[in-house]
Image 1 (cartoon, chains in turn green, orange):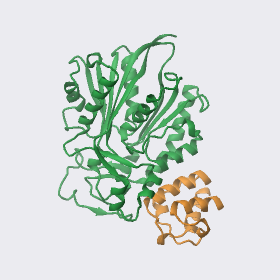
Image 2: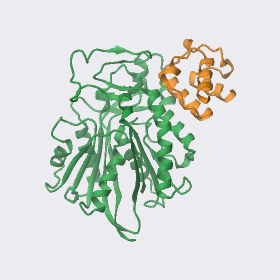
Image 3: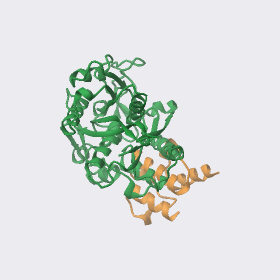
Image 4: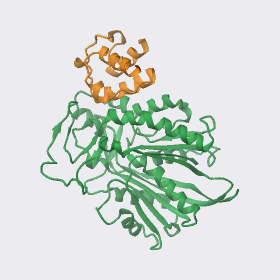
Length: 341
Length: 73
């Protein structure tokens, strides 16, 4: 049945100027060579935000790049959604600041989503809901994170993986015969909260001199309670257990198979995790999008950065590729959907 | 066990011929990354999900094999 359906119209990414290479890291962690870091993580370099540069700054740059490159008028946007875990302030909402900085109409809606690696897919679901309910016509979906600011320089378990970055996506309503985004599957398991966490700085646990005390773990990584902590083995268990199930559930709801799926874009966590998932899910290599060598794991931005890369190529089937997207991580939180791109 | 040993050799960055039940992990780079990679390897080859903490405390390859056997029941 034809009607107005939401689609991804354009995607643009923005990476900050700072670069953290494997050479820089190997100098800090003598037990890991440059080659080993690349081979295990699939990452050559990460981009790092400057001292005074926030996630909202990166998101603003990504939006401006999108407006210029894709000739999108800021006036045509009637809703802005920002997925970030690095807001400028406790309050107000970063999306409100960005509305003003981008000169978006004051009749625009604006809100933040506090999610990590699943944030983009959740954002798409909100954008689709707004558009297909007739509440908005063009939604600007932003993702931006600066985990580097939470990471202790001597914690190789996370510093080798995460990079900073932002993306901007225009989701708009178009006349179509069938949905161009969806269906969705969601999942949450707050029992995993402790395994990927920055403990202090929120209402539960303020930052104190004691929380800033550094400790060294059994793998020689240094961090305090003010830093990002990731229990790698627990996250691997969660991922290998949850993501294949979510994808199977999504394919059942969508009435698809891997054969009828053109591309698969999973959250770009790191090479060893992605390869383990690819094998377990039996995804053919040629359908499996990998895009992290020059940016690392950019949290909420990994999926749209990969989409930007895919959309840069001018393949003849552009606009028709049925692409599976699955975001998963901190929370635990996960979500999957299809987007026709 | 051949393919499991080959996978472990890759993770530990040693020759496959050196991997056997008695191999001493404490003398090798048995760090969090190796543990994470081994979780994926064991899941792929034995369809068993090992706990990170128990795995990181393994001292020999035979300890990993015992964990797998216990999980398989």
